Length: 327
Ligand code: NDP
Image (cartoon, rainbow, N blue to C red; front, side, top):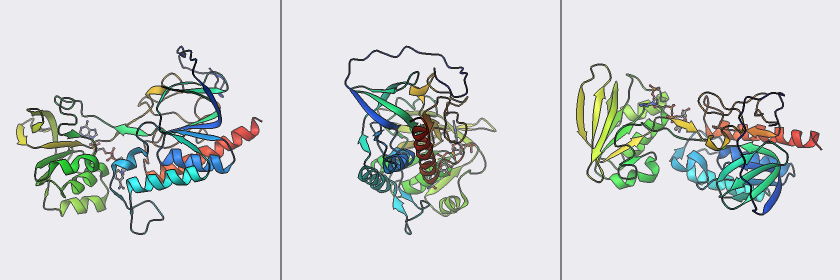
C-alpha cells in the first residue's frame, strides 16, 4: 500500500475484481455535504475533471436541520436544506459532475486509485474523502425495535408526526437543544433528558430552551429503556446518581447525542484514529499520498458547516498542488 511516510500499519484487504465500465477523473470527491461541495467548486475552478459521489442522501447533516444562523452571508439565516441545494447547484455550475451513488469500496494501493459503487468502477489520480459523520445511537433496549416507529434521529424529518404528544429529546449539546426547541412547535411537551447537571449547548440556545414553557429539563438522567406496542408509548428514565427509575408516557424519542464518523468503507484503506476518524498530517493529507480528507470525517473538534466548507477548500488546494507536482 502506498504511503508518503514510507511505512504503514494497515492490513491489505482483497479488492473485488470487477468487469464494470471504467470512468476516469482527475479527482473524485466522496461525500456531498459542505466539505464535498466546496472542494468540488475549488477543484473544478482549478480545471480538474471532478466527480462527486454524494451517497444516497446528498447534502450531509444540514439537510436534517432547520434554520442555520451562523453560516456567513445570510443576514436572516438560511434553512439547512436550501443551503445545500444552492451549494450543489453552484458546484455543478462550476463544472463538477455529481452522482448520488454510494461508494462500497476503494482501492488506494496503486495509481490510478479505484472507487467502486454498486454499479460502476471509477478511476482517478486524487481523492478527497468528505463523508462526514452520522448520528450516534443510544444502544438501549427498544431503540432499534422502535426505529421509525417513534424513535428518530431527525426532528426536522419526523417532528410533524408527533403533534400534541409528549416528546423526549436525549442529549445536552446544540443538536439536542435545537431539536427540542423546534419540537415544541408540534409536541404538547418536550422532555430534555441529559446525563449531566448542565448543558454543553451554546448559551444562546440554552437561554431559548430555558425560557420555553413547553420544555422540561431532566438533569442527571438517562433513558434506559424504550417500550411500546407497535410504536413508542413510554420510556424508562434512570437517575444516574440515585439509580431511581421512573416511567414516562411519550409518543416519540429523538436521539441527539452526537455523531460517529462515516469511515467504514475506509477501514484498512487509510489510517484512522481510535474513534474511527481519519488521521491527517500536514493539514488535509491522509496516510496515502494523493488521498485527502475534509470535514467532519476527520474533525471532531469544530464540526461546523463553515469549518467543513473551509476544510473542503483546503483539501482542494492541496489536491491541485499534488496534481500539478505529480505531472
Ligand atoms: P455534541 O457532541 O456537542 O453533544 C452531544 C451530547 O449528547 C452531549 O451533551 C453528551 O453528553 C450527550 N451524549 C453523548 N453520548 C451520550 C449517551 N450515550 N447517552 C446520553 N447522552 C449522551 O453533539 P451535537 O450533535 O449536539 O453537536 C455537534 C456539533 O455541532 C457541536 O459543535 C455543535 O455546536 C454543532 N451544532 C451547531 C448547531 C447550530 O449552531 N445551529 C446545531 C447543532 C449542532 P455530555 O455533555 O455529558 O458529554
